[in-house]
Image 1 (tube, rainbow, N blue to C red):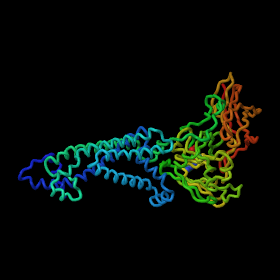
Image 2: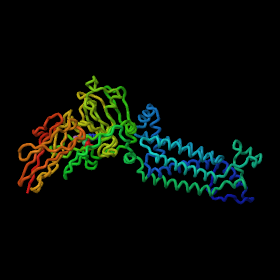
Image 3: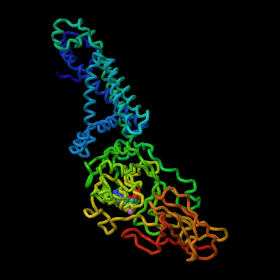
Image 4: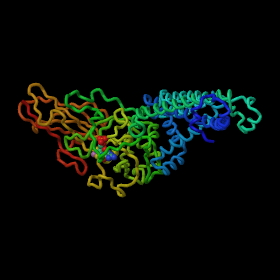
Length: 566
Ligand SMILES: Nc1nc2c(c(=O)[nH]1)N[C@H]1C(S)=C(S)[C@@H](COP(=O)(O)O)O[C@H]1N2
Ligand SMILES: [Mo]
């Protein structure tokens, strides 16, 4: 059959004259074949409309509530691990794309069938589009952290799609009565006795022009809605995946920060460092932007019963802990700023390790080093004993109530209280291997840094500033922070010009894994003075005065500032 452009230009009731006879019989033939095709087209258009409208509605809701995303993720979730593993192995990083194409193809097939069915059963077939909506709704609502609003994209999309199918099928006309066919025509129609009568009144139901106009309108409007939706939701990718994250509440929340944790002194570091002010130390020239929906964490190696893989959602599904933990960089010089305190939320590392069968060396486990690898190839080696000794080592997903910022390791990083970052705090982590210190040297170890590096007790004067000038008269608050993560701070002392040590007032202790703020009221006299500070940790050990460089395992010495009092 050939459909000429003529076909679409014809009026509903072409004039029938002697010179048109041949045309009319061609029409009859064309119409008979064309109608199911146009039905299928209507179905596809309805499906397209549903997806496009859903994409637009997902903008104010959240990108991951769009049905294609939601259904895709649900499939990944429900598929047996062997199937997902096969997909990951076969399609590598394209597995999500392959999944989406597969989902789309299935959807197209159903839409096509519904479209053809709509020729005869307009209402039920149109309602069939709502079934898609139901599937999308269930998928969207089953997401971690889903709210009722997540149903909106699927529901509204499906209603729009059903509407389009209903209207288009209406333009194609209803099936004629079989009795209206002549015997010859019925025979001609073969297995399709419902085929439209070829002439006159029979064609009244088939509004070609109306169909073309309605179909084009639906196509253009849907394409517009879909494009705007994709554009506004930032499409897919890392940023969209981060925006879509809703962190679940912790099963084990942090204790409230004690009221007196932060003396209110201008110039003193805040107890909790805001994400935007948090120091950043890494080797990344370009901050890795990881799409959380694609991200996987592999856990394998010595003493792991069977290698396991976790998705971001797997982690969010687990019981999360929330803790205030102070992070410190080994390359922080005395008095430096590579230290910050945040409220982290994450999965206790020990739970994942125990489930995988890992035992610490003290229980006879064969691995004493846990090597984390990041997406950008950083390797960080941490003692297995430390992460399993009861401290709050975690795979953090949140920082101060936000999904991890990209700078600080989105989607997942490690945080281990008491160990310098380069031996514990792998950002953009994607692989954890259990091995031994004998068998493997991590990145910084190969560059002359120590294999093991617990954080050294340190204290810092935040105010007054070095070489600052202050006015004599009233007392001057000298204030700062002190840290000895996982041992805690017991005492901070200040002295002036090498005089007797004076005990500072400590902020209330949040936990032994956090720094402590301190303040000492200085009855300052005129002249140039040297202030020094030292801290004593929870074990009663006072930080050493001995100056040590940052290499190989952290600087030591007392922080001092020189101040002019006028
Ligand atoms: N992938 C990766 N993770 C990393 C690093 C890095 O260079 N790459 N640096 C580590 C070091 S040395 C420190 S001190 C901390 C710093 O974490 P932050 O940048 O979030 O403060 O991250 C650790 N994790
Ligand atoms: Mo560091």
